[in-house]
Length: 277
Image 1 (cartoon, rainbow, N blue to C red):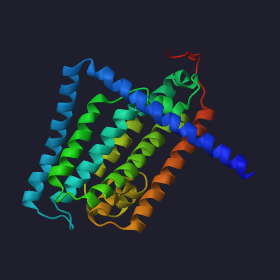
Image 2 (image 1 turned 45 degrees about the vertical axis):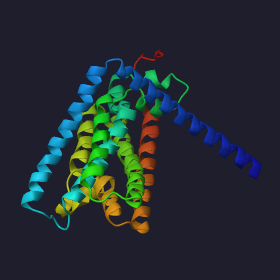
Image 3 (image 1 turned 135 degrees about the horizontal axis):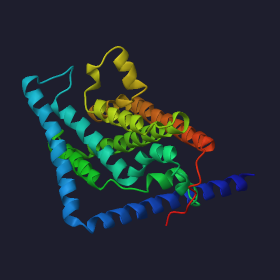
Image 4 (image 1 turned 60 degrees about the horizontal axis):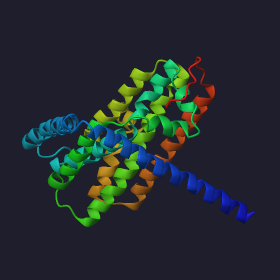
């Protein structure tokens, strides 16, 4: 019995490692494809960095007038920007195809991804890369290194961990919103708006929200878990709150996968089952 369980675990691990390798290959392919048009690539990345700096500049001016917001200073706001933009950039660069789930469900084009012998969610997610989103990631790294106060090895280690966990939350939230198209139909615009609502709220200090809006930040649009709690952990690390963050990441990931897989079983489409070459 134990040998059987061990064999199953080995097979499970091999499958996961295979998808990690395949994801790396897809990212590499998309990146090399973008580099064929190097000038356009650099313009897109540079434009995204300038756009992000423009948003941060607003907070620079704000904190010059008001040095503190409920205990938050500019360095804390810079941490929020670094965390959010790195997560956004990495997630959409590697898995831009997630934005296509709702549209594919509505149009019936999801059949393209079901015809291949791979996980359909992974197939959709890696089908497209957000090349310009590399600029967001570079911007986040620059902001972290230059504007978040003293950069230590311990602080950077905690930051890397919370970036990973909050990145899982952002990915899962996108899957969850896009998967609602299986149930309500024509949900692509709403799914995109809800995701960008998460990004928008994540770029504000959550301690300025109160009452019903605070509840929304903790539940419907989990900006607190995607940005504020990770930043608080970097500011003052606490194992208990890290456990809360990880637990929420596990919960929303499980929920997103359940909603997607259940919706996939309900999926009905036209005669569009063609193999994408």
